[in-house]
Image (spheres, rainbow, N blue to C red):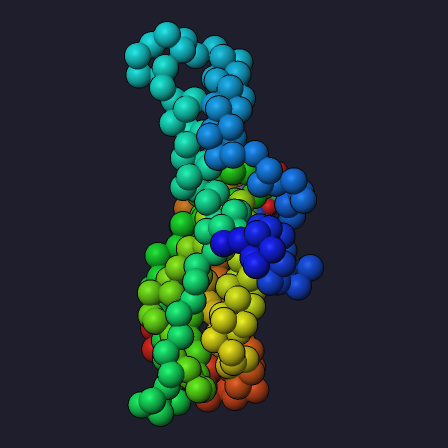
Length: 219
Ligand SMILES: Nc1nc2c(ncn2[C@@H]2O[C@H](COP(=O)(O)OP(=O)(O)OP(=O)(O)O)[C@@H](O)[C@H]2O)c(=O)[nH]1
Ligand SMILES: [Zn+2]
């Protein structure tokens, strides 16, 4: 998504500085293929250091598989070219009540341990002059999730993007997620989960609206 001058937008320039994912200014100067080749070499070094035999036919392709997974799947939301184009439609039907998109699949990666964060996002808004194509809500969640993340920043990035794209402050975001860094290592707690929320506009000021949102997502 290059701008009119043919330049790639700076990463996260649509967000306030405090909400941007920390990225260097040269983050996207190298091609995807160059990144995959370099990461593949680094991952091969990790495997060698662990003592694994890379001539084994099952392990031989792993460094490149991991590198492709990082660049093209797990972390594709770092690259501004993958930011979804949020299509709006004129609100001809005058629908101004709560719209909730619940149970959006969320797959992210803990930026402290590089292991998965798995959960659900629930988003809602009050349509004003425009309504949004529903799938774009899922796409916004996925774009910001597919990065090294902490759940708090992810929640606020989604909220900020939706407010800007939908042209309204009346937005709610709630994320419930399991952190594999908590479940599979460290405290090894497999029953706890983490809930974060961001309420803006009328969701912040109107408790009944907030309760209705929570009721609709089964909370
Ligand atoms: N606030 C927040 N913390 C997170 C998130 N994901 C992981 N963490 C925490 O990040 C912290 C990193 O703390 P450290 O003490 O540096 O790391 P650690 O020694 O691996 O910590 P333990 O997990 O307690 O073993 C841990 O407490 C993690 O649970 C997140 O999304 N938000
Ligand atoms: Zn972690």
